[in-house]
Image (cartoon, rainbow, N blue to C red; front, top):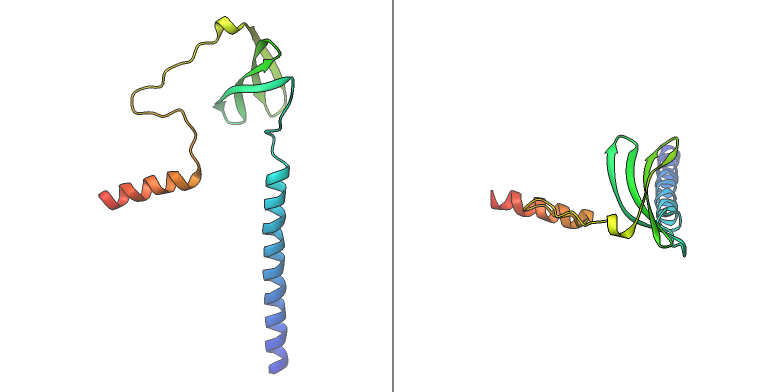
Length: 116
């Protein structure tokens, strides 16, 4: 009976160790494998989702800008833009265009639930 306990405890320990190593590896990959690298010649100015696996993006290349259509299969240049053609669009009242982190979103939801 004691032998069965040690076998179960050892198996549980191995599973916990594997889960911990998977967690550590995913953190490492998330930090080093980001697509948001720095470049001296190209910069992503803005992007917006246009459907599932579809994005429209404005990319700065030197002094010019490109409007790109990005899908899982290809990237298409939709239009070449000059700096005078870019104009910031105001968001509707009450909507923020700034991205927030997960923690602040959850805090806002928690505050709403508490106030109700």
